[in-house]
Amino acid sequence: MTIKNSLQSGFFLFIFFFNLQLTIAQKSNKSDLEAKKNQIQKEIKAINEMLFDNKKKKAVVFSDIENLTYKIQRKEELVKLTNQQINLLDNEIKLNINQQLELETQLKEVKEAYGQMILKSYKTKSGKNRLMFLLSSETFFQAFKRVQYMKQYTAFRKNQGIKITLLSKALKTSIELLLVKKNEKEQLVLNNREVQKSLENEKNEVNTIAFELRKKEKNYKKEIVQKQIQTSKIDKEIEKLIREAIARSNKKNSGSKSFNLTPEAKALAKKFVLNKGKLPWPVLRGVVIQKFGTQPHPVVKTAKIKSNGIVIATPKFEEVKTVFEGTVLSVLQFKGSNPTVLVQHGNYISAYKNLSKVYVKKGDIISSGQEIGQVFTNNSTGQSTIQFSLFEKTTPMNPLLWILKM
Image 1 (cartoon, rainbow, N blue to C red):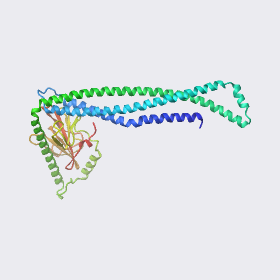
Image 2 (image 1 turned 60 degrees about the vertical axis):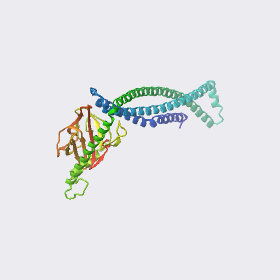
Image 3 (image 1 turned 30 degrees about the vertical axis):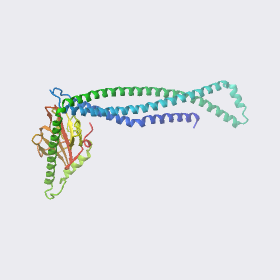
Image 4 (image 1 turned 90 degrees about the vertical axis):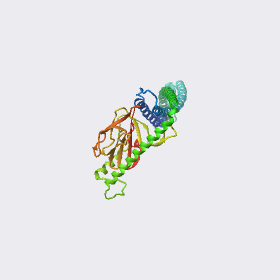
């Protein structure tokens, strides 16, 4: 390998590995943060559309606090993610500054060496000197080596010129990249300040509403308890219906806790499992305002709420669709509650609660995405919600692990 090729390879390896360190180390984190931010921004937009469009109510109610709390939680997460992005940019800016300093040092050293080389070359540039250098050789081999040396010296000079050009371009690119990152950071800081300002306003609004309704807090706690009792009744009835369906499928083996499935039903259950994480939402547009499992109430922190599914806020008159093909296991309704539709998919059951209209009946064979009803809208709050649950036999599962991320 010649001196020229060796130096060029070394230089390009330096640039390559530095850029590799600068990009690969940060790219994964940056893309993940950006994806999470985009998701939260979509949720906040949906919350505004679905929970705050109806502002014609005469008096504030506790649901206003709930709705604001949902939005505040998501905005706080947005601020947190943006701060992480800013920290990543700070690290990138530091790396970029170090790269810039390194390039400036190298460029200075190469230019100084190149200048000395040019000066020396000028002093010994005459053909006579070079000819005398060759003629003074004692042997033919020594003359040959001196010719080779002069060629290498010329190539080295040329390579130093190329290196100066490349270093200058790299330095220019580094300066431009640093400016881009500083502008990006400045924009993120400005956006964060705007979000934090709106957060403060919304927190103050929550405090104002809470102060106005403090006298009614006991009644609200009772309302939470009553809702939980009603939810528990529906959940127990769903469990009972599933157990009865299991028993009917096992006439010869009444002690079985699993469905006695036909080959077609087994294939359907297998297909259902293969679609975990890819199932469509039961509504076209929506935002999750209550997650699966036991959790503190968003407003009354001392109150615990248990959910066998997720609650999705959605636009008024939204059509509810099945998430997978199957058979309607039951359509049930309690006094004081809205209809619930259960759809069986082999050993799995999907439940759609809080409907205002139902388009199917028990025993109907339905396809994935088929409309089965319409979501119920609470006239006093203007809120339209559906509770969506999934069961493996009688065991509730977290729907968020099964449906697509919107």
